[in-house]
Length: 401
Image 1 (cartoon, one colour):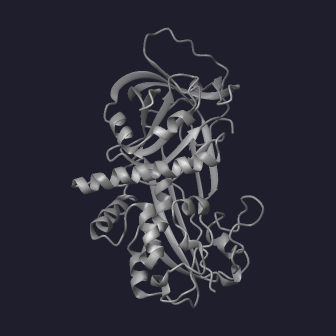
Image 2 (image 1 turned 90 degrees about the vertical axis):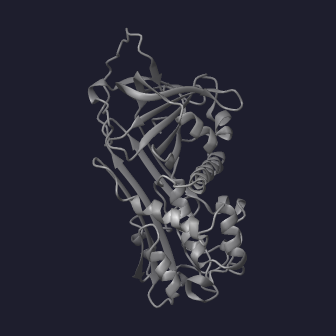
Image 3 (image 1 turned 135 degrees about the vertical axis):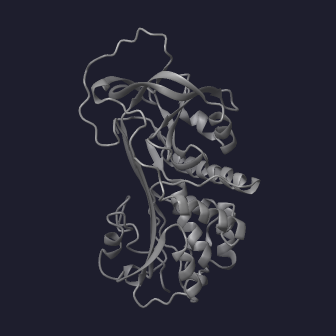
């Protein structure tokens, strides 16, 4: 039985303005799917910082749809809520991915999917064509049977990295090992940009941040006074939140922050109520305001095994060497997915680079200008402001971790 080692390595994304209600519905559906993934991951790490790139996880699954047949294809379509075999969906997604590398000056957004193929593995011409036209994807020949080859191909994000008891992807739970690897799919998304209104290093100071467990820490807190989009809302359960949007240079992206107004309200009470429709209602109701903004520096890197999550979503046959039907890839039986790995990171600082040491200067405020102070756990969305499409989702429970 040939083993299909598909390591899904993910980092950040976004789509364009829909020309019809179908495209608007697809955007909302993808946001809800992103939130579903966020909640699934959050449940497994209840007391940790979190960042993930939802669309980065979906692009490899879309590529797999081109090769999936029978029940395997149906399970993928049901989990995603759409199929790339629908011409209108395929047209919309291609338009989305086509504009991703074309970001505005001052911002850099890169999406790349590479399918590394064991030399000598037959591939169907149709699948090769679909890969070459999907989300800046490409095919590369490689000798995947050499030790550590998959790790080298993924530039350190490979399936042989450890996330627990042993090397991920070095062997399959149901048989097969590196010597039987045929394909490795690597999907990465990266985003770099400066703030439209930069935080000044000289204004960064050590201020208290109250963690989820009530522990108060001194953390480097960035500060700026700027024109921002802000609003106060409540979720369906009545929890009050403050929502702030900080724009990056150009129009490529903005950082949306959701902060509970009640210090005693944990994020776990708000996360279950977040929906695409609710986020749309909040963001379209934001008002321009001059505010003093306090935001902690934070850097988060996570490594997740998506296999159990996808399995809980009903994607079962894909991981079973006896039931997986991926005949569209090579016309042969025996291919299956042995690993599904997601790795994402984000760093927020004064200039988008590594921050210098914070000063101990305390800024004393005497004005009546409203204040947004993220001195307790909050949720963030890296998103494209015009289309509301989410690059990445995360939360900060402790900026020092």
